[in-house]
Structure formats: C-alpha cells, structure tokens
Image 1 (cartoon, rainbow, N blue to C red):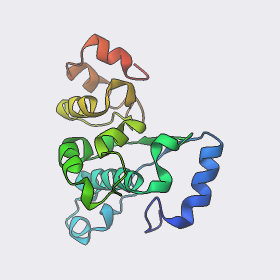
Image 2: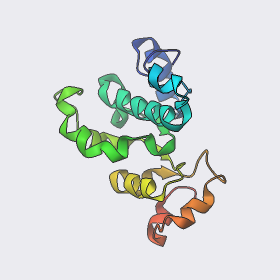
Image 3: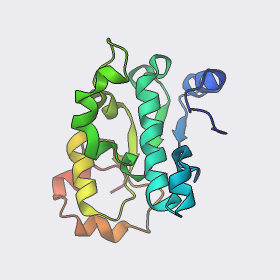
Length: 167
C-alpha cells in the first residue's frame, strides 16, 4: 500500500476495523511490479509483476504474527490463484525458518485460511491451487465471466466443481 507492506504497522488500525466488522477484503495487485525495476523496465509488470505482487502480499500476511489469518474474523480474498505461491508451496514450507517466526504454522497450513480468486488462464494452475488449498477455498471472482469457459476446460471433476464457491 503506497510503497509499504500490506501488514505495515501503520495499517494495523485499518486491519483491526476490518476484522471487527467481519469485512471481506479483496487485495488486487497495483501494477507496481513487486518493486522490481527489472520487471518494470522490461514491460513485464502485468505478465509477471502482478502475480509476484499477489505472492508477496500473501507471504507478508503469513509472516506477520499480528495478521494471522486463523485469528481473523474478516476474510482475505486474494486474486489470480495467489500468484506463484501454490507452485512454490513445498519450497516455502521447507524454507519457512528463513522468513517465519519459529512458532508459526507452515505456509501450506496458513494458506488454507485465505480465499482465492480463480482467475488464471492455465488449467494446471487451477489444479495446483486446488491441490494445495482445496476446492472450498477457490472462488469465482473478478474473472467471471471472462474465464468461465476455462473452468469447463480444466477437467475439474463435478464433485470438485461443486465445492468451488459460485459454481
């Protein structure tokens, strides 16, 4: 948010109000390329910068003890299947000691506290996220009806499709 982490101490008051109201917070990339001049200067802001921002946002929430999703009454809704995180989940679990407090649950556990917009044109990405967090955490969201036909093409079984909110 304006060059700061979504969990910056300055945003604590805002987060507490959202939590008290049991609000739904949809957090979309800003087009800031995750702060990378290399991404920005090569016109890769939306192709890879936005998914990087999605990933950074989720990891900042996971790493900040005051924003543990399990203790949140508000719902955090992340777009684009959460960027690169589903693909990297085993790696994030293995390296959790480098970025999480010792008492924090592994990223793969905390990832199941969020809700995820299903916007992504690659069927394999949907399957990967579904495997990591479960169908019940996937939502039809900002891409509907833009990517509705992709759901049909994914090969998602009828049982799994019925668990995805909005289907």
